[in-house]
Length: 135
Image (cartoon, rainbow, N blue to C red; front, top):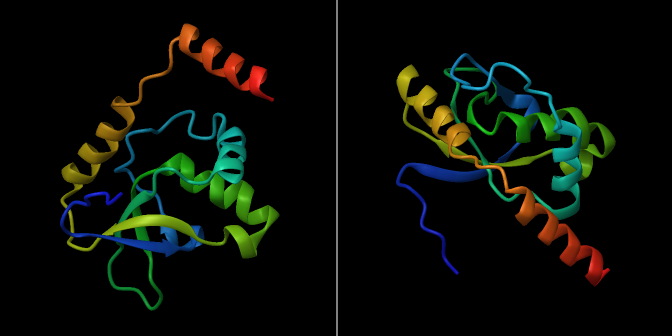
C-alpha cells in the first residue's frame, strides 16, 4: 500500500538530540505525562506516526525545530535512547524543507493535539479483553 505524502515533506531518520522544541508547540503543560508508557509502546510496536520538523536555520551541524510529535520525541530522547542508543538513536520524521511562519507551526501543532480523541471506556474494555482472551 502506498501512502500519499503532502508535497514538500521528506521522510528522514534523525537523532532526537538534533531537535529543539519551541513555543510553536501547542502542548505546554503535562508534557511528560505518560511519556514512559509511550516509550514502552514505541519499543513494543514501533513508531506509528513520524514526527514533523523543519530546518532550524543555518548551523554547523543539522538542527531541526519540532513542529509536531513532542511526546514521541521525548519518549525517544528520555527513555529509548538512554536504554539502547544504537537501536533507538534515530527517530522517523517528516522534514518540511520550506520555512514556515510561526502561526503555521502553531496551527499544525494545535491540529495534531485537538484531533486526538480518547477511546470510550466500552471500546477500551472490549479491545483489552480481546487481547487478554487471545493470549
